[in-house]
Length: 381
Image (tube, rainbow, N blue to C red; front, side):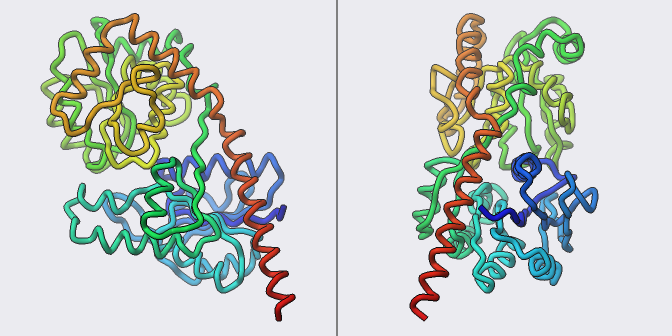
């Protein structure tokens, strides 16, 4: 296997989201395996991460997201690094430019489908743009050596758009960091007392506070007796959400990372995720690992992460009051405990080490195919 991998990502530090988190975990694997790498991204806090060079490009902010603008930096960095393979993380504008470089230079590429941008169009009132975005998604992924979707449904979606070479690659989880035993820590008990001073049940959400997360649906459960809401995260919707949830005394914890994030998960009894445009749902995995009982829509990525009635509850997102019904069921302690234990067990094998080993194997296959193709072309020449 070649030892030089370039990662071109649409999101990197200080932005924290599923794309950034995946890239950081991949870089950790590269460091452990002594694989040489570099990163091209819209933003970065430093010029290097774990010893890997980070090249930044100009960007514009759209709905709070820094969207990288293709610039000579991309081709220059790739020309100088001469990668054996280019990993495109949630490719969009920047990824499209890098993919063009791969095609011109006969370098294999792996494009990771992580964001349903077309699905967001309706959520942001841009229905007219959806067909255009779908065509762009297909045009972007089709030329890649392989496209990786987080679930079988995501893979099917790409294939319906005309992308032929597609495989499934999920996401790992740190089961040591996100652990039910944290519930017994003193700092978690202090946090629970702040949120629920009268030992109320804590219903929580973790994620970006944006329209596509449909956090308003938590209003269905906000007025249930002996229950408190914990909302962890930040984003463009925060001020509006704080206003509409103010009558229910919801606790907004803001952006959290690392141990603090794990402690907030540990303070949650029932985790409710209402977003219907998720291609995967990493926070669902983290909540399951943390020992929370999870409620999520029976749509998109969540339905592949939850076995209804066994490791969580799936809700028809079109049913008014569906989330309330699910939370009411989980108020029964014995049922909730049974669900949370099974949920924890279901993610124990989903480690980042195992997940990224599968990714490296995909790299090997793609590079071998590319090498064989080049050798075949030479023989025909």
